[in-house]
Image (cartoon, rainbow, N blue to C red):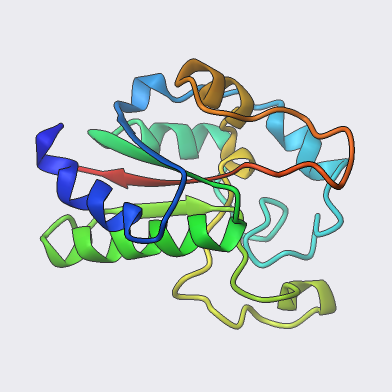
Length: 169
């Protein structure tokens, strides 16, 4: 995993809380995550990175593609946008280093409100990425398996934990 220390350092430059390198087999897939998208997300059918959009891969297709990677950097932050920006920076650097299939994922926080919510096209199509859960990853089980903090929040005042990932070769 030493090969990936450069990318861990790049993520840490964003002052994220944790960065963990794992193999794809340590990521927990469970297609039931789509139920939370369908019946818990106000952007269902609208969000620019939403699995309800035309052309989105099936969960089985996502799983098959993601399992081809060698390493996944899991990035944890209590700031959604920080997690996303760190993952995009790592993806970009890995790409420039020759990993042309490097791919980051995070709950998108680039815009205050998703343009898709008002029927518009994505304002940041080169940076917007799908969230873990939207492709069938059980973020709660994955975080628990890796000893990272994540639990359902009882109140809006509790600190949220956000996760991004960068899939690397």
